[in-house]
Image (cartoon, rainbow, N blue to C red; front, side, top):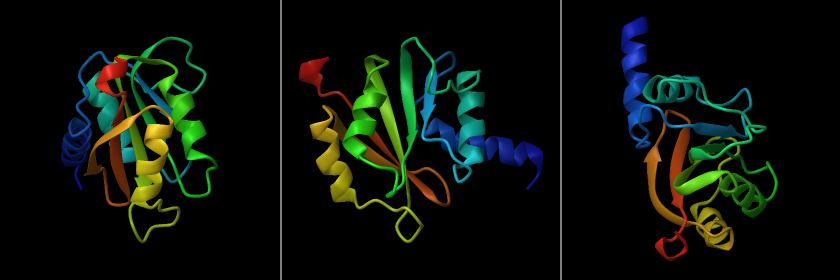
Length: 141
């Protein structure tokens, strides 16, 4: 794939996340299996780099890469919402069905409310990853 076509695909995939220029996006759970095309697209859309786990200011969104063997999902979601702005969103990226580390949808739907979040949508984020959009319920905003 040509560089410009790959860049356009990256932007299109990142655009599905509803991010805008100037947003601050924190990335958690990075490992060598993440989708680099999606990451590149997000950085192009927001016009800057993803910030790391040790970032100490508020963020507009959290990109949380999560696999079945990563530990307790509720704890990870609670940690993820800590730096979010009032209307921030957590994008929980999990391996698609049939991929190593896949998480069952009911595990996400059980963990989200326990962490104080509600699931609003799920998208295909790439060949191997799906994204679940999680937000704080309106009554808590």
